[in-house]
Image (spheres, rainbow, N blue to C red):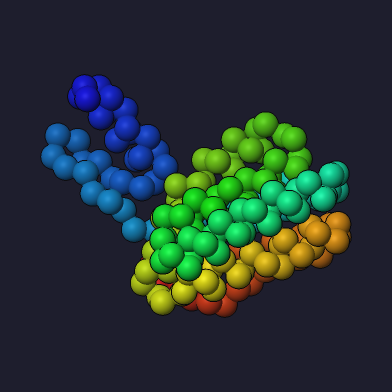
Length: 174
């Protein structure tokens, strides 16, 4: 790999807040502050809520996709595969964001993926959140979509990102 490619990758990681670069010296992996963790969760909540507020066209198709992503998440949890759980979580939430059909909303949401994945990994590893529990936190979201209830889904999204005490404790410990 060329140095230019590595420099570009490092700049991308720095732009995402995952590393800090001290020019001509070194780079270090950063840790999210409590405020940063809360901001990432809040931003993801706002974007996902905005995506579904207009309704759930084809909610049966959406529910099928969410169910598949949740099954993959549960399989990853059963296999004790953290990466599979995080990847499935990303797929699950991407489906919710796709509901709006808004390209820029999806781009903004995608910009937070690395930070959300890092936060999720940290929370699970450091604070003993079981992978099964991480997967089950998605059940209320799926159930709301299955019945096509937008208000219930909006509340579930809020609870998922902002009101879950275990997750807040995990995020707060960073």
